[in-house]
Length: 309
Image (tube, rainbow, N blue to C red; front, side):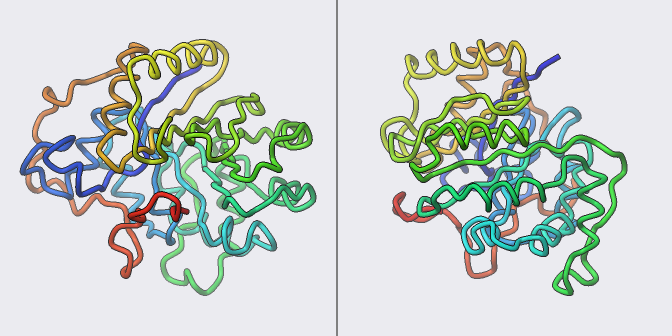
């Protein structure tokens, strides 16, 4: 049966402490808490740097059964190389430990920069390169470079389907050729609410849907009104009849995303647990369950929304 999952993009934000997260909750327990409120979370750290297998293993082990992560593909592939000659960096990403998520690995998100226009040949080549199951991903991971020597993970416990979604941010993508190319490769075009800044495309191009809600009036900042959430609820009810639907709120600047995600979940009858009912996590419950950022970048969220990647 198709499933609908609603969650948040990332989980480690200072303003959330004492607001969404209870006062006094240790930082290392934030993922455990958030994953008991939502059924899915989008991993942001994979966009900024290669993680380690130990981190993915910990994230898998400290989240509930039937929980699913999505993961953002590295910006080195999308923003720096712009999908050009990316087999080695793709192998490095797949070897960084993402397969340690096992059954909790959901779609992989490829977020493109706003200055990257549609290039049919480059996109077709990239889509053909993407593995469509974890066995193929493990095989490609073996082609990793020396950069991951001694810290690579190149195996899967079971062969599972692997899905991909692409978020476009240049208006040249608003054309039939893009739709047909994505349908050919079963790649979901992200349905993105971006306060009108970037293209809104709601064509269904894959066997699942991937939504990112960045704020309707002000990018990354504004929350959603009851009427706005009712509208999204109505759309999702139509889409969820035949396909899995993943929805991530990315309007985190003012602690809007967890609240909006909870409210939309309730409207769709998907709220599994009330945060107040979540039992306390033991003090000795493992190591730090946090997203890993580059050492020089403690908070990857830019202060000014227009500069965000």
